[in-house]
Length: 296
Image (tube, rainbow, N blue to C red; front, side, top):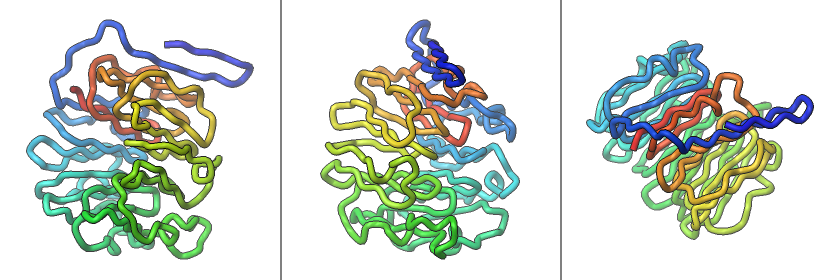
Protein backbone atom coordinates (compact mmCIF):
# COMPACT_ATOMS: atom_id res chain seq x y z
CA UNK A 1 0.00 0.00 0.00
CA UNK A 2 1.25 3.50 -0.81
CA UNK A 3 0.05 6.60 1.04
CA UNK A 4 0.93 10.10 -0.13
CA UNK A 5 0.17 13.15 2.01
CA UNK A 6 -0.03 16.68 0.65
CA UNK A 7 -0.98 18.98 3.51
CA UNK A 8 -4.43 17.89 4.66
CA UNK A 9 -5.03 15.74 1.58
CA UNK A 10 -4.37 12.04 1.80
CA UNK A 11 -4.49 9.78 -1.23
CA UNK A 12 -4.40 6.04 -0.70
CA UNK A 13 -3.50 3.57 -3.41
CA UNK A 14 -3.47 -0.14 -2.72
CA UNK A 15 -2.02 -2.75 -5.06
CA UNK A 16 -2.47 -6.34 -3.98
CA UNK A 17 -0.15 -8.55 -5.98
CA UNK A 18 2.12 -10.56 -3.64
CA UNK A 19 1.42 -13.65 -1.53
CA UNK A 20 -1.86 -14.36 -3.27
CA UNK A 21 -4.05 -16.68 -1.15
CA UNK A 22 -6.41 -19.24 -2.61
CA UNK A 23 -10.12 -18.83 -1.78
CA UNK A 24 -12.97 -21.18 -2.54
CA UNK A 25 -14.34 -20.30 -5.96
CA UNK A 26 -17.58 -18.35 -5.63
CA UNK A 27 -17.07 -17.42 -1.97
CA UNK A 28 -17.89 -13.89 -0.76
CA UNK A 29 -15.42 -11.51 0.86
CA UNK A 30 -16.50 -8.20 2.44
CA UNK A 31 -14.54 -5.32 3.97
CA UNK A 32 -14.97 -1.69 4.97
CA UNK A 33 -17.54 -0.15 7.32
CA UNK A 34 -19.41 -2.70 9.46
CA UNK A 35 -21.83 -0.63 11.56
CA UNK A 36 -24.81 -2.70 10.37
CA UNK A 37 -22.96 -6.04 10.05
CA UNK A 38 -22.69 -5.58 6.30
CA UNK A 39 -19.19 -7.05 6.59
CA UNK A 40 -19.31 -9.44 9.57
CA UNK A 41 -22.61 -11.06 8.53
CA UNK A 42 -21.44 -11.95 5.02
CA UNK A 43 -22.94 -15.38 4.23
CA UNK A 44 -20.97 -18.50 3.40
CA UNK A 45 -21.53 -20.55 0.27
CA UNK A 46 -20.93 -20.06 -3.44
CA UNK A 47 -22.35 -17.12 -5.37
CA UNK A 48 -22.62 -15.80 -8.91
CA UNK A 49 -23.76 -12.17 -8.45
CA UNK A 50 -23.35 -9.57 -5.71
CA UNK A 51 -24.56 -5.98 -5.20
CA UNK A 52 -23.92 -3.46 -2.43
CA UNK A 53 -26.25 -0.72 -1.21
CA UNK A 54 -25.69 2.09 1.27
CA UNK A 55 -25.30 -0.26 4.26
CA UNK A 56 -26.60 -3.63 3.06
CA UNK A 57 -25.69 -6.18 0.42
CA UNK A 58 -27.53 -8.73 -1.68
CA UNK A 59 -26.18 -11.74 -3.56
CA UNK A 60 -27.45 -14.55 -5.76
CA UNK A 61 -26.20 -18.03 -4.95
CA UNK A 62 -25.28 -20.71 -7.45
CA UNK A 63 -28.71 -22.16 -6.65
CA UNK A 64 -30.39 -18.96 -7.88
CA UNK A 65 -31.61 -18.03 -4.40
CA UNK A 66 -31.29 -14.55 -2.87
CA UNK A 67 -29.18 -13.74 0.17
CA UNK A 68 -29.35 -10.33 1.84
CA UNK A 69 -27.47 -9.02 4.88
CA UNK A 70 -26.54 -5.83 6.67
CA UNK A 71 -28.92 -3.05 7.68
CA UNK A 72 -32.50 -4.16 8.44
CA UNK A 73 -33.92 -0.76 9.46
CA UNK A 74 -35.84 -0.52 6.18
CA UNK A 75 -36.54 -4.25 5.66
CA UNK A 76 -33.60 -4.57 3.28
CA UNK A 77 -32.78 -8.02 4.67
CA UNK A 78 -35.91 -9.89 5.65
CA UNK A 79 -38.14 -8.60 2.85
CA UNK A 80 -36.33 -10.43 0.04
CA UNK A 81 -38.61 -12.46 -2.25
CA UNK A 82 -38.25 -16.19 -2.86
CA UNK A 83 -37.60 -17.76 -6.24
CA UNK A 84 -34.79 -18.08 -8.76
CA UNK A 85 -33.04 -14.88 -9.82
CA UNK A 86 -30.48 -13.82 -12.42
CA UNK A 87 -29.56 -10.18 -11.62
CA UNK A 88 -29.53 -7.93 -8.54
CA UNK A 89 -29.00 -4.28 -7.65
CA UNK A 90 -28.92 -2.56 -4.24
CA UNK A 91 -29.97 1.05 -3.70
CA UNK A 92 -29.91 3.26 -0.65
CA UNK A 93 -32.45 1.36 1.47
CA UNK A 94 -33.96 -1.07 -1.02
CA UNK A 95 -33.00 -3.77 -3.52
CA UNK A 96 -34.31 -4.83 -6.93
CA UNK A 97 -33.77 -8.13 -8.76
CA UNK A 98 -34.65 -9.94 -11.97
CA UNK A 99 -36.21 -13.39 -11.84
CA UNK A 100 -35.46 -16.13 -14.36
CA UNK A 101 -38.26 -14.84 -16.64
CA UNK A 102 -36.83 -11.31 -16.65
CA UNK A 103 -39.43 -9.76 -14.35
CA UNK A 104 -38.57 -7.11 -11.76
CA UNK A 105 -39.03 -7.54 -7.99
CA UNK A 106 -38.16 -4.96 -5.32
CA UNK A 107 -38.26 -4.74 -1.53
CA UNK A 108 -37.13 -2.51 1.35
CA UNK A 109 -38.02 1.09 2.29
CA UNK A 110 -39.87 -0.13 5.45
CA UNK A 111 -43.23 0.40 3.78
CA UNK A 112 -42.48 4.02 2.81
CA UNK A 113 -42.81 4.04 -0.97
CA UNK A 114 -43.50 7.71 -1.67
CA UNK A 115 -41.21 7.66 -4.72
CA UNK A 116 -42.87 4.58 -6.22
CA UNK A 117 -39.74 2.45 -6.15
CA UNK A 118 -41.74 -0.62 -5.17
CA UNK A 119 -45.21 0.13 -6.55
CA UNK A 120 -44.20 1.57 -9.95
CA UNK A 121 -41.91 -1.19 -11.17
CA UNK A 122 -42.14 -1.34 -14.96
CA UNK A 123 -43.70 -4.45 -16.45
CA UNK A 124 -42.13 -6.59 -19.13
CA UNK A 125 -39.00 -8.65 -19.54
CA UNK A 126 -35.63 -7.17 -18.67
CA UNK A 127 -31.99 -8.22 -18.93
CA UNK A 128 -30.28 -5.89 -16.45
CA UNK A 129 -31.18 -3.48 -13.64
CA UNK A 130 -29.54 -0.72 -11.58
CA UNK A 131 -30.59 0.97 -8.34
CA UNK A 132 -30.04 4.60 -7.41
CA UNK A 133 -30.93 6.20 -4.09
CA UNK A 134 -34.48 7.25 -5.01
CA UNK A 135 -34.90 5.75 -8.46
CA UNK A 136 -34.29 2.60 -10.48
CA UNK A 137 -33.27 1.92 -14.07
CA UNK A 138 -33.63 -1.25 -16.13
CA UNK A 139 -32.91 -2.32 -19.71
CA UNK A 140 -35.52 -4.50 -21.38
CA UNK A 141 -34.78 -7.42 -23.70
CA UNK A 142 -34.98 -5.10 -26.72
CA UNK A 143 -32.38 -2.70 -25.31
CA UNK A 144 -34.74 0.09 -24.20
CA UNK A 145 -34.18 1.95 -20.93
CA UNK A 146 -36.94 2.18 -18.34
CA UNK A 147 -36.55 4.49 -15.32
CA UNK A 148 -38.88 4.86 -12.35
CA UNK A 149 -38.95 6.47 -8.92
CA UNK A 150 -38.72 10.13 -7.94
CA UNK A 151 -40.24 12.37 -10.61
CA UNK A 152 -41.95 15.19 -8.72
CA UNK A 153 -39.68 18.22 -9.39
CA UNK A 154 -38.62 18.23 -5.72
CA UNK A 155 -35.07 19.02 -4.61
CA UNK A 156 -34.21 15.34 -5.18
CA UNK A 157 -35.59 15.26 -8.73
CA UNK A 158 -32.75 15.99 -11.16
CA UNK A 159 -34.26 14.42 -14.24
CA UNK A 160 -32.79 11.01 -13.46
CA UNK A 161 -36.16 9.46 -14.41
CA UNK A 162 -37.94 11.81 -16.84
CA UNK A 163 -34.79 12.54 -18.92
CA UNK A 164 -34.01 8.88 -19.63
CA UNK A 165 -33.43 8.11 -23.33
CA UNK A 166 -36.69 7.32 -25.12
CA UNK A 167 -35.35 4.35 -27.03
CA UNK A 168 -32.13 2.71 -28.08
CA UNK A 169 -30.02 -0.40 -28.09
CA UNK A 170 -28.49 -0.22 -24.60
CA UNK A 171 -26.32 -2.94 -23.09
CA UNK A 172 -25.68 -1.84 -19.50
CA UNK A 173 -26.61 0.91 -17.04
CA UNK A 174 -25.48 2.18 -13.65
CA UNK A 175 -27.32 4.52 -11.27
CA UNK A 176 -26.46 6.61 -8.23
CA UNK A 177 -28.14 9.41 -6.27
CA UNK A 178 -29.33 11.81 -8.94
CA UNK A 179 -27.91 10.55 -12.23
CA UNK A 180 -27.36 7.53 -14.48
CA UNK A 181 -24.81 6.42 -17.06
CA UNK A 182 -25.37 3.76 -19.72
CA UNK A 183 -23.53 2.04 -22.57
CA UNK A 184 -25.27 1.66 -25.92
CA UNK A 185 -24.88 -1.13 -28.47
CA UNK A 186 -21.92 0.66 -30.10
CA UNK A 187 -20.08 0.96 -26.78
CA UNK A 188 -20.73 4.70 -26.40
CA UNK A 189 -21.51 6.28 -23.03
CA UNK A 190 -24.71 8.23 -22.27
CA UNK A 191 -25.39 10.09 -19.01
CA UNK A 192 -28.36 12.07 -17.68
CA UNK A 193 -29.52 13.63 -14.42
CA UNK A 194 -27.63 15.71 -11.87
CA UNK A 195 -24.24 16.86 -13.15
CA UNK A 196 -22.30 16.40 -9.91
CA UNK A 197 -18.66 17.40 -10.50
CA UNK A 198 -19.20 16.90 -14.23
CA UNK A 199 -20.27 13.24 -14.13
CA UNK A 200 -22.85 13.92 -16.86
CA UNK A 201 -21.22 16.66 -18.94
CA UNK A 202 -17.66 15.27 -19.10
CA UNK A 203 -18.23 11.64 -20.09
CA UNK A 204 -15.33 10.39 -22.23
CA UNK A 205 -15.61 9.42 -25.88
CA UNK A 206 -14.71 6.02 -27.23
CA UNK A 207 -16.00 2.48 -26.92
CA UNK A 208 -16.63 0.98 -23.48
CA UNK A 209 -17.66 -2.38 -22.09
CA UNK A 210 -18.25 -1.55 -18.40
CA UNK A 211 -19.24 1.53 -16.36
CA UNK A 212 -20.13 2.29 -12.73
CA UNK A 213 -21.57 5.44 -11.15
CA UNK A 214 -20.29 6.62 -7.77
CA UNK A 215 -21.59 9.46 -5.64
CA UNK A 216 -19.40 12.13 -7.27
CA UNK A 217 -17.31 10.25 -9.83
CA UNK A 218 -17.63 7.58 -12.51
CA UNK A 219 -15.31 4.82 -13.70
CA UNK A 220 -15.40 2.80 -16.91
CA UNK A 221 -13.41 0.20 -18.83
CA UNK A 222 -12.87 0.75 -22.53
CA UNK A 223 -12.78 -1.90 -25.24
CA UNK A 224 -9.02 -2.35 -24.70
CA UNK A 225 -9.44 -2.98 -20.96
CA UNK A 226 -8.09 0.42 -19.86
CA UNK A 227 -9.62 2.36 -16.97
CA UNK A 228 -11.20 5.81 -17.35
CA UNK A 229 -12.40 8.09 -14.56
CA UNK A 230 -14.27 11.41 -14.55
CA UNK A 231 -16.12 13.68 -12.16
CA UNK A 232 -14.54 14.40 -8.79
CA UNK A 233 -10.78 13.80 -8.58
CA UNK A 234 -10.07 10.82 -6.33
CA UNK A 235 -6.54 10.09 -7.55
CA UNK A 236 -4.97 8.49 -10.60
CA UNK A 237 -6.36 5.25 -12.00
CA UNK A 238 -3.98 2.27 -12.19
CA UNK A 239 -2.59 1.18 -15.53
CA UNK A 240 -3.11 -2.22 -17.08
CA UNK A 241 -5.92 -4.35 -18.50
CA UNK A 242 -9.07 -4.69 -16.37
CA UNK A 243 -12.31 -6.66 -16.49
CA UNK A 244 -14.45 -5.09 -13.72
CA UNK A 245 -14.55 -1.72 -11.94
CA UNK A 246 -16.81 -0.13 -9.31
CA UNK A 247 -17.11 3.30 -7.72
CA UNK A 248 -17.69 3.82 -4.00
CA UNK A 249 -17.79 7.08 -2.08
CA UNK A 250 -14.55 8.83 -3.15
CA UNK A 251 -12.76 5.58 -3.98
CA UNK A 252 -12.82 2.85 -6.62
CA UNK A 253 -11.83 -0.79 -6.97
CA UNK A 254 -10.99 -2.68 -10.17
CA UNK A 255 -10.24 -6.29 -11.07
CA UNK A 256 -7.38 -6.82 -13.50
CA UNK A 257 -7.20 -9.54 -16.16
CA UNK A 258 -5.50 -11.89 -13.66
CA UNK A 259 -8.27 -11.44 -11.08
CA UNK A 260 -6.30 -9.22 -8.71
CA UNK A 261 -7.92 -6.25 -6.97
CA UNK A 262 -6.62 -2.69 -7.32
CA UNK A 263 -8.08 0.00 -5.04
CA UNK A 264 -7.51 3.75 -4.97
CA UNK A 265 -9.14 6.92 -3.67
CA UNK A 266 -9.36 9.59 -0.99
CA UNK A 267 -11.76 7.87 1.41
CA UNK A 268 -10.25 5.08 3.53
CA UNK A 269 -11.71 5.77 6.98
CA UNK A 270 -12.96 2.19 7.33
CA UNK A 271 -10.30 0.42 5.26
CA UNK A 272 -12.33 0.51 2.05
CA UNK A 273 -9.05 0.83 0.14
CA UNK A 274 -6.27 -0.35 2.46
CA UNK A 275 -8.06 -3.52 3.66
CA UNK A 276 -8.79 -4.74 0.13
CA UNK A 277 -8.02 -8.47 0.18
CA UNK A 278 -5.37 -10.27 -1.80
CA UNK A 279 -6.52 -13.16 -3.91
CA UNK A 280 -8.14 -13.61 -7.26
CA UNK A 281 -11.70 -12.43 -7.85
CA UNK A 282 -14.28 -12.36 -10.64
CA UNK A 283 -16.87 -9.86 -9.38
CA UNK A 284 -16.87 -6.79 -7.14
CA UNK A 285 -19.50 -4.45 -5.67
CA UNK A 286 -19.04 -1.17 -3.79
CA UNK A 287 -21.59 0.27 -1.38
CA UNK A 288 -21.35 3.59 0.40
CA UNK A 289 -18.34 2.61 2.51
CA UNK A 290 -18.17 -1.19 2.25
CA UNK A 291 -17.30 -3.64 -0.51
CA UNK A 292 -18.03 -7.24 -1.47
CA UNK A 293 -16.13 -9.46 -3.91
CA UNK A 294 -16.66 -12.96 -5.29
CA UNK A 295 -13.58 -15.20 -5.44
CA UNK A 296 -12.56 -16.61 -8.81
